[in-house]
Length: 109
Image 1 (spheres, rainbow, N blue to C red):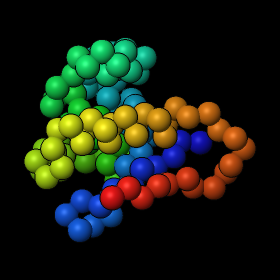
Image 2: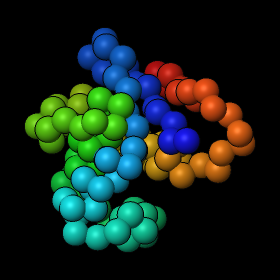
Image 3: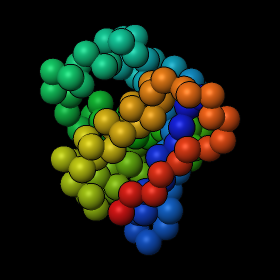
Image 4: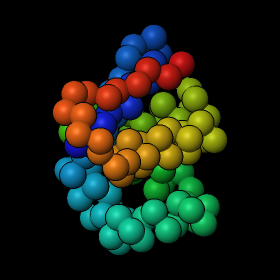
C-alpha cells in the first residue's frame, strides 16, 4: 500500500501521495522510468522543474494538480524543503509493507 504524506501549506492540510497514477505522470513528464527518476534524485541531478513535476503529480492524494500551484508551494517552503518532501513521498511510496492495511499518513509541521 502506498502511504500519503500530509503537510500544512498556507494554513491548510494538503495530502500528497506518490500513487501509481502520480508515478506514471512523472515518467511521462521526465521521459524516464521511476528507477531512472530515483537514480537522478540520489545524484542530485534535478532542479525545480523535476521537483515541481513530482510534487504536482503527487498533490491531491495522488490525483495531481498543476505545476503552477506547486511553484507557489516551493516559493512558500523553499526548494530545499521541497526536496525533503519529495524524499518523504518516495519513502512512503516505496516502503515495504508490514501487513498494515490502514492509512499511515503522517503530519509534519
